[in-house]
Length: 414
Image (cartoon, rainbow, N blue to C red; front, side, top):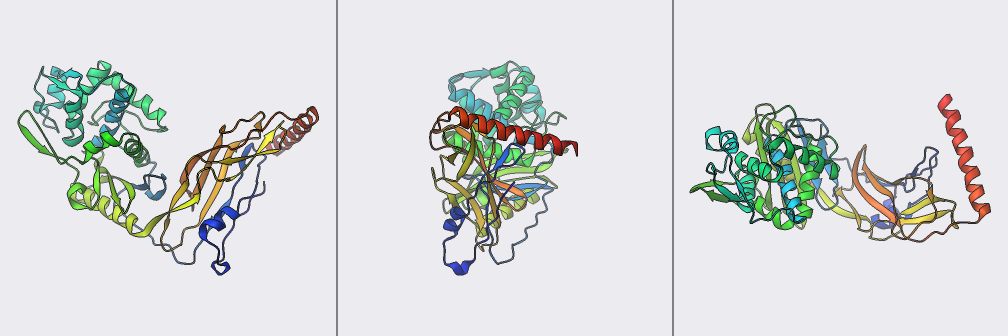
């Protein structure tokens, strides 16, 4: 495998972006995974070290998905009411697909009323037993008031019961690339089956922000009145931080205090997730400080423009030995304003790619590492058509693959 890192010298007078593009090299590994682009940028200043009291935390830039900070981000913990984000996403998805409408009404069953309503003593929208409530109002109750009864009514109305709805939640999570989250109910009330990581909560929050901009506005509404009871949004950031507009808090004895929050400043949206804190004040302070640190220290840089050639993928049996690859959207990453980040970008795909290849055909992903962590991962596609090569060319490629296979086999026996 051949791969090269490139560290620019500022004395050369070249732009940061130009140096990134100039560093592309081809590197195909014997393990079938190609690292086709490898470049890095490193400044001279010392990186600022950030610490948080939160046991688990992550900070993400919403547009690019860049991870700016993480701490124990892949540990599974009880998500408490933050799990309601998964519940409402399932509802949003069902509305988008035409399976239900905002005007549909669901019955508040005795089960929902007793376990999630006024008699439960937990967070509730105070829906009356046997009443019919629209999906629109139930979403308001779930998001603004964190109503357990709201979520249960949505679950029963869509799937018949909470267990069946929880299965839908897990299946939908897998669709969104959340491979570790599990769900046992719709509201996050204590259950061993409710487990999520702060990373996957951030993935979910980012998906909601980007996919459902109209529904996302619900998370910023300050209050909601139902059954003549006025309740205020539980998100402390809405009144404590410029640009804050969502998402969800949570607390259980098992999980501690946590929250998923988001704010926009100067056109940049950050998403923060913290969990496992000792008090509501600690939760609010930890989330606010992490967001403020992100806005103060990072800015967006474009590594590759949309449809700019990023690198080349090796082709098997084609009339060309390689194909250019690019991303449909700009590949952007958040970098520290002081220039201290060291980034490595690689195209990762299973190869060689068999001909014929059509323009826009998916090839793999470009991954950008900040240190040991993947900051951005974006799909890439072929930019050109590659036809089937001659019989001689296919035979030569087959022989090369045979030799590579023998090398792999020999290495495995060592």
